[in-house]
Image (cartoon, rainbow over the protein chains, first blue to last red):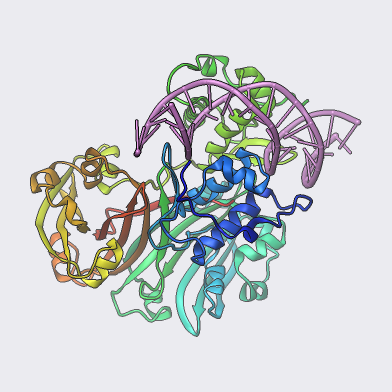
Length: 253
Length: 253
DNA sequence: AAGTGGTCTAGACCACACA
DNA sequence: GTGTGGTCTAGACCACTTA
């Protein structure tokens, strides 16, 4: 038995709720995550082995393993067979998540704003029809918006949705993020395919985003699917590169 | 019991190897994945329930669940409680993986080439020192390379490594990707933090990447860590945006 | 009411790293 | 050899969806 294992404050895990709807593995992993992020458990610290943790918390090994696996997948912990589990040394940053830009900006404690430039119903071009899985020429919902934070315009967003969303109002779009509106209608985005690139700003983007003439924009093209795998949204977005970038943490399997 | 479940060809899973080193869940998930990608199992098709699959294959439910979970994480399958498991409708693309550009290009069936412009040992600037976790001013390995495919230069790469890698030769760098060299030395990259953005090309990039003057480049900044969580590589790269973009599939938890 | 995935248990054997 | 994580089993109960 190794004696240099980190032993975290007992209190951290003593009030697990076995009756409520929150899974035990999630209660453990989220508490462990905040302990790591706040530095209560230091980078490089070694955890006890899985069975010992299980005994300490009164949980079976698979449950403990699942909690640890969550944090391994987030890049906060590293497991090595024969060695043990350690807190990663490197800086900890947030994952790129499946949220809309509005929520990204919101959670970063800024004041997001939206302006709707166009919002109508129009026939689907071939590219749009293919992405959304509708027949070319059939009606789709189109919207073009700008997104600003603290008064500065950071992005221009063009989106296409299937016709069943034609009752979304312009006022709703100015108030909330698109994904928030969809969730309010019981539609949850589950999978998104994104392609990130760069190009010169178009004339209109130059004006709206206050970019120097011929300057660069960061672009993202996305198709999003709901829980049943049906395409819900196709969009291409242009971002002011000095105001926005994409951060990711990749974990190798 | 539902009778409209997809039943795949029995042969697909009848030769599971229980003696070899390949986990059963991996054998099942990889076969299922290729069956989906080749269209043997159609988009939208429904799978049998997990217990039935287990009986069919002679596996326990947790093992079957894990195999399915692998494909859910890749965005190929969707699971809904009370409903079942279905193949996603949308187009299937490949995940952004933790590989170097060299291997990305290689696997896309192109001929990658590398040219080393600079390769030396120099004192670490504050940014580099912070990223690699070394003391500012101490020696680090520096390299600047261009990467080409089919004779066209697509990227300019600047990288910094800890001093223990000072014996990597320029010739090695021209032959193989950096990550391949590191793996050959027993160093495996496990976690990487990336930041993707855009800016105007610098003068030298304009020439090397044959970009119009003042044109855009796609940039990536990365810190990579090994299995123990130690920083192994810091780099910032510039890509020709008409030749390269980043594709990702995001799956919401 | 029946069927599904979501969670959890209490064990077991194995491969790998290290002293 | 000892300790670790990696895999696997054979059950159990629950929550949710659909009929």
